[in-house]
Image 1 (tube, rainbow, N blue to C red):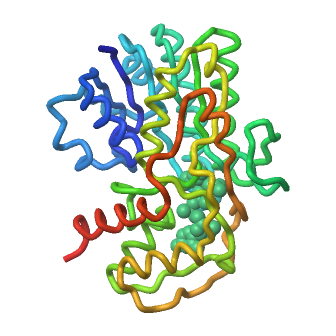
Image 2 (image 1 turned 90 degrees about the horizontal axis):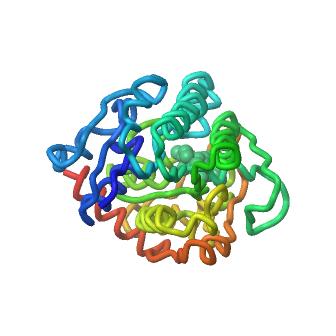
Length: 315
Ligand code: UD2
């Protein structure tokens, strides 16, 4: 039994990881200040976790949260490309300074391994698909720069201090608990809820942009594998975590409309500033080093997600 810290443990991805660790009997500490994380994600398990209700921007509090911890999943962040374009300062503070505080906490407290939630936005709009980890990053938005900076910090802390860091570049994760009703919500959650409420979603651009949409269960699996893999295979490295399939927004819209029984076509608006046009991962490195293989495909993931939103939000 090991001691785990999950930053952003009340959030979409973090709370799934908390549950997975509790299910296998591990000790779990959560760092979250509920700025974007939700209390209801932790309510059923509050008596089973050690909750540190602090911000990643508070260096001393982050250090205290790292004390006595073996393994860290650093999921805490202020996500969203458009949020970072509109207001770069808060996301800079949380995503870059917060990640630095976390690494300092991990180093000073003697943690063994940090698994970091990196982003596929690092690849930008360069030519060449699928995206391979050896491509030089070309971040387009403040958010992409911030998440990439976190990766570089992770790698430096491995090289310089021997901390075992593993960066997982998530490709457009979706599933239960993704917040659907914020202006910065991921597209899948946003569209699913709007359709259920009979509202017509807007596609930004022509809808032919593609994403490697990846169900949350695959991400939980990748994290558990990343924490268990031998250090010589994974420490200091970066891995794409995705399904290895590209789906356009128009296709995704059509499928969601079928699943929700929504009869209307989308509205179209201008493309978003800082948006990546296309995204598709090569997941060979994760397959080889982590033994990762996606367990839940795109359509099955969509079905599960729509069912969850129906239970949570309909009526
Ligand atoms: C980026 C990263 C992703 C993750 C995420 C965190 C890429 C390719 N992906 O996701 O890995 O780090 O950031 O936030 O960089 N859209 C609409 N209508 C809407 C909302 C969105 O058309 O109401 C479009 C949007 O313009 C984009 C696509 O849907 O083309 C996906 O947008 P998103 O915000 O769900 O995720 P994205 O790709 O910015």
